[in-house]
Length: 70
Image 1 (cartoon, helix red, strand yellow):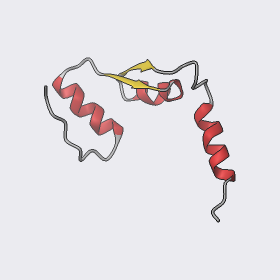
Image 2: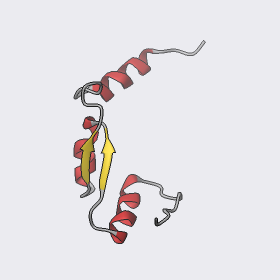
Image 3: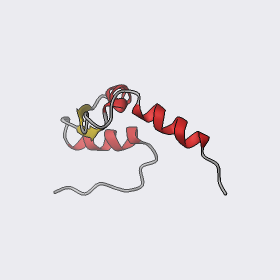
């Protein structure tokens, strides 16, 4: 199995390295990231669609933004 460098600064450079090894790259990710994944010209296999409904990332970050430190 090929190894992958852990020095990638962005998902796009990671995707590019994978594609240079094999043109069939599929990421397992929550559905909210579909547009970002497709913009990097890789495939998406959505996971946990029953748990992560569309918009769940925005809701999570909105909730986190309301929290305050003690």
